[in-house]
Structure formats: C-alpha cells, structure tokens
Length: 442
Ligand code: NAD
Image (cartoon, rainbow, N blue to C red):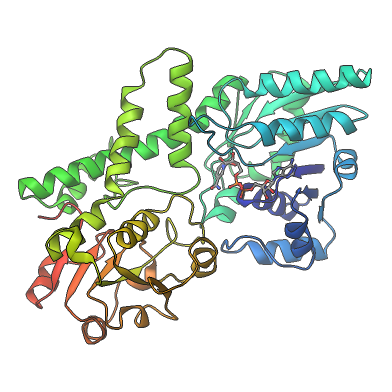
C-alpha cells in the first residue's frame, strides 16, 4: 500500500520506516528542509536503536522517500498520516497549530478520497477540528472530495521505538467509517499475523486512550515517588516496598520504579493537556494535578539532597558536581523535560560547577547548554568525576550500573554519590565508606 507521513520526528520517522519495512511505499514529508536534506544523505535527526539500518535499507530498496513537497506527498497516497508535534500551549493545553496546518495542506492538494490519520497525541475532539478545517478548505476550493478522519494514537517508547512499532501491544484505531476501517485493517495486516492486535473504536475513545495511557504511567511514577519520600522519613526502604507490592499481580512490577521524576516530550505535556481538558469541561481533575505537582517537586530532590549534604544551598557555591546521565531516560538523546535539566539549572543557580557525561545525549545537551566556566561535558563517565565534590546520577544507562568504584573514588574529591535511580546497594557502599543517598532509602 502507499502512504504519506507528515512529520519526521520520533513518531513520524519510526512509523514511516517501519511501515516501509513491512513492504508499503512511504513518503515522509517535513517542513524542516535541513532535516529532509540530512535524511536524503542518510543522516537521521534522532538517535534511536535500530532505526538507521531500517531507514537505510528501505531507502535503498525504494520504499521510503523524504521530501518537503506537499503536492507530491498528498498525491502519493490515499492514506495520509499526521505525526507532527503537539507541544504545550501557554496554558498547558495541546497546541494544535501544526496538526491543523497539515490538515489544511492535505485539503489544498487532495484530488480524490483521502483517509487522514492522526498519529499525534491530540485532545478529544481534535478529529472534529481536523474535519472542519478540511471541509472549510474544500469549500474555498469549491470542490467536493470525500475523506475520513481517523485517530490512530502511537504508543511507542523512545529508546525502544522500532521494537514497539514492529511488535505493538495494540493498535488503536478510532473510526466508524467502513471505508477507512478497511484501509486501516489492510495497512496494519502485517502486524497482526501472530494474533489480532488491532482494536477498533470510536474516534473520541481512541483519542482519550492515548492520554489515559500516559496519565496512568505518570501516576504510577508519581505514586512511587510520593511513597519514596515518605519511606525516607519513616525509616523504610522503598526498594523493598517496591518488590513487596509488585508481587501482587494486580499491581505488577512494571513501571513502579521510584526516581528523580519523569520527563520527556510526552508525560509532562500529556498530563498537563488532560488537566486542561478537564478544566474546559468543568471537571476537577484532582488526581492529575497531584501527579504533576508531585513530579515537579521530585525533579528537585537531587538538588535538595546535595544541598543538605553540603550544609545548605549556599554551601554549593564554588563546588563541582559530576553528573552522570542527561537524557530523560536511557537509550535516547531526548532531553525534553529531563530531570537532569532541573538539577543542572538549580546547581548553576546556587553557584556550583557541573561536569557531565551522557552516552548519547552530549550533542543535544551542548545545543541546549553551551559549555563554559560553569559547565563542561566529559569524554567518558570517569573523566566527568575528576576533582568533583560529589557524583549525581540522573539517568539509569546500563553503563552506570556496575562501575568501578575504586576508579570513582580515585577521581572524586570526596566519596559522595547522590543516586536518582537507585542503581546501587546502599549498605554495600556505606560499608565501603561512601556517603550514599538514593531515593526513598532511609
Ligand atoms: P517531533 O517534534 O520529534 O517531530 C515533529 C516533526 O514534525 C518535526 O520534524 C517538525 O519539523 C515536523 N512538522 C511540523 N509541522 C509540519 C508540517 N506542517 N508538515 C510537515 N512536518 C511538520 O515530535 P514527536 O516526538 O515525533 O511527536 C509527534 C507527536 O506524537 C506528538 O503529538 C507527540 O505527543 C506524539 N507522540 C510522541 C511519542 C514520543 O515518544 N516522542 C510517542 C507517542 C506519541
């Protein structure tokens, strides 16, 4: 089948590459000329395990093309995906300008039936707005062209996006149009061979499903962080509590890790957008507000622990802190809303210097925070420690899990670790003379 995807970010590029991989003919379009030029030279705009090889193979075999030409992209296929950003507006609601601008481009160029599929995360009711915008443009053009608007939210995880797309838990499709439904069924057929993963529902339920999923995951994290903070005061160890509750199959072990807060391009903005939706419909979303508030506070815990260790925030002036992990989670270079940013900015505010290392997010970090007297990026994890007064860990990259503690000790000025991801055993480190602070571990 032929299809077009608007947006070559994490979602658009992975979707395009993976749909080409199963044999479809895909055109990916973006308004960012530089991104498209780079993609046409084989340079990917994001770091995502396994993606480069799939893009390379499908471009070489002629199933995947990149363009900025809207007319060509709309002409290419009946199936038109929207996978552009929906960043938070000033009030926290999802900014739909990019989504609606794509809808307009499609409407200006379509000359026959199109199914317009929204893969971006958008508030309930957006499909109606897309439909209205398309109808408006068609009326201006004085043409009547049939079309359907479908919701097909994306559940991939950055860092595991290719695997998630090729072997999805579920494919949610919101439409009541038999014609669109048939096209979608055929499009996703290759992903259903093992067992049926596609779930058809009405458009509004599909739109809400995406927010419900992200809000539930964010809730699990904030819940554990709340308990972790209490465990510290109560003299308990949240890691023991985690195992204790995870054993109950109604709770499960997944996604109940305490830490220094959730970040990324999705959880913070989607929780906020859902809160905003609640406000618009006059519903008091107390739980969502609390999930967000707990997370905002949690992003400050590493700084608070460092400040307490040194005797107050003012004592951090002139200190050097080594930071391991900058991306918001492992296996991605995405720095959006990363907890590391809250720590870095608080440390600078307090007059401390930061020496940081991340396995893949260095370039992205440099783009956001240029190096200078208060900030340097080290070539490897151990060099980041040279002469630092403490080590703080923000991201649980595999290579931080079993480091050489003698090497750390040789490089640091003092044996102090503030571990935002509970990677190490507190007793073992303390018995070896370390001052070790985890999350929720009294
Ligand atoms: P992104 O910012 O990485 O990419 C968006 C791309 O869209 C950019 O390359 C931008 O140049 C392009 N774009 C903007 N306007 C355009 C237009 N008119 N025509 C063509 N291209 C245009 O965003 P992303 O992370 O891929 O997220 C896209 C959507 O998917 C968001 O709604 C997000 O919430 C959702 N989502 C993201 C993830 C994730 O893990 N990143 C997962 C699931 C869902």
